[in-house]
Structure formats: C-alpha cells, structure tokens
Image (cartoon, rainbow, N blue to C red; front, side, top):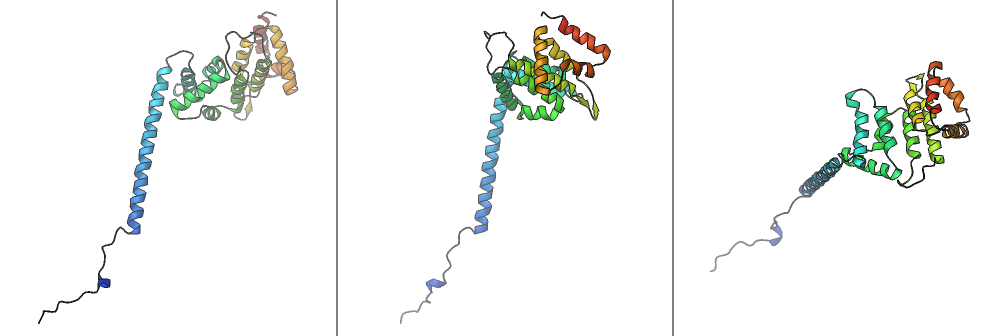
Amino acid sequence: MYQQYPTYNCNEYTQPQGMTLKEKLVLGVAGVVVLGGAVILVRRMIRKQQADATERLTYLDGSAATYAKQIKMAFANDGWWGTNMAALRETIVRIPSKQVLRQTMTAYQKLYNRSMLRDMESELQSSEYSEMLSIISAKPDQYNANASTQVTLAQLQGWAGRLKAAFDKTYGPIPGTDEAAIKAVFSEIPTQTVFAQTGIIYKQMYGRDLITDLKGELEFWEYGPYMQIIQGKPR
C-alpha cells in the first residue's frame, strides 16, 4: 500500500508580499527630497559661477558689473546707518542709458541674488527713490556717442522731477530739503537758458513756480550761493 502524503490546498499558500503602500510612499518622498536637493545644489553652483564671472567684470570701469557693485556699496555705506546718497546719485547719473541700466540690474541679480530696484526702494526714502527714478527716466534708451548734445524734454523733466523730490525730503515727520540733490541738479544743468526751460517744465508738471519754491526751501543765506552756480554758466 502506498504511503499517503498530506495534500495542500493551493489557496492556503501565501505569496510573498511586495512593499506596502506606506513603504512606497516613504521611498517616493525620499527620492523627491534627494532630487530636489540635487537641483538646489546645482542651482547654487550655477549662481556661484555666474556671480564669480560677473565679479571679475567689476574691475572694468564703466561696466554694468562695476555699476552694480558701486550701487551695492552705496547701500552698505561702509557699515554706517543709511545709504551713501552722494555715491548712489553719482553712480546712477553715470549710467549712460536705460539699456546699460537693465544690464546693471541683471549684474546686480547675478552678484547678490537680489533685485536692485527692490533694494533701492527698501533703502531709500520716498523722495530719494523718486529722485533716482527721475534720473533714470531722463536717460536715452541706448547710448550713442555721436548723439546730439541738445537737451531733450526727458532731461528737462528729469531735472524738474529731481528738484521736486529734493523739496519733498523729510527727516522723519519733519519736512526738510535735500540741498545736496539740488546742488547736483544745478551742477548738471549746462546753461542759464536750460535752467529757465527747466523752470517752465517744473511749472507744467507741478503747477508751481520753481524760483518761489527754491526761495521757500532754502535758507536766505543759501539761496544766493546756489543761484551763483547757475549764473556762472553760459547763457
């Protein structure tokens, strides 16, 4: 007689199970984290390479990278409180065109991973920011060394806007005047005729007389020396 072997029901056999849903989710999340970390690392490396490449251009006078660094240094002000407005104003004035300004903003972003205009708005009082915008708006779209030296309407509007911004200067709640900004405009205006034209544009823009506002904003002993700057220019 043959020996009887026990029989097994195949339905009772349990197949080895794969990963649970929880394990799959954990591994999936881990993969995303690793991939995300790699992307961030690569992005940082690219930004550093761009910053290093742009930094090397800051030694070239008149380059967009140089302007960007000078603007950042004006914001830093050697660690002192506030912004070095004289340095910032000088740098913005030296930028020859809106095209170069856009290049400067791009260089600033590459160097510091920050928006130049946003930093400027954060650093400056509203009157100072308006002055910078007036300087920028007066620039040509592109620099042309052979362009006519005739003063444009945009320049007149820029000077008028900067003077108004200087008059709107405040020291906290106390109204004041930005004498340095006025002097900068007076130094740039080339002739007495152009100064008179600036007064006309000022009247059109703000409905006020420029000379009257100057006398109201400056002390009586300041008004004479300031006007001598204009009177010393050719007609």
